[in-house]
Length: 172
Image (cartoon, rainbow, N blue to C red; front, side, top):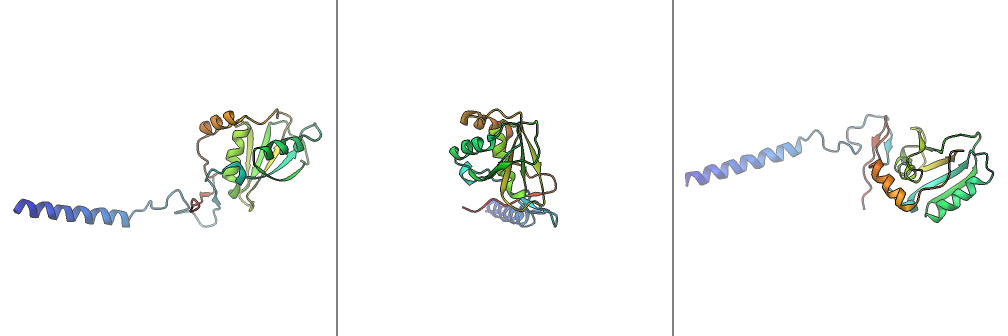
């Protein structure tokens, strides 16, 4: 009988310890905007499907009409193409992806379509969720579906840029 009382008492103490640990957890919410410094933007790090990604396609190549052709390729892959036009100056890179905190996850997905050869340019002050895809002279073609999936595996999950915090995942 005495052993039963001791086991019961130990069980109650263990339960109290677990509850206290959960209530006082200093890491609760860490990584999802918990403990984010004031003024830091919340970066969308939830990977999206192409149908949920908004882009502008800009031509910075020497080939006229390149943005229109690539915009059609993106539309065929279910991306939301908002604007098509020319960039103010040419670039020699494959592509440049310009985006803000709300476009972090979208830019991450787009990197895979360029096999991680697009230069990311993050602007913490940008408030929209659109990614500017600026095509450079080094651009050949978008990756195939298989190549995109492999590239996404290599890239890993989206990560909040320096000076931002991961936004909480949207509720389903």
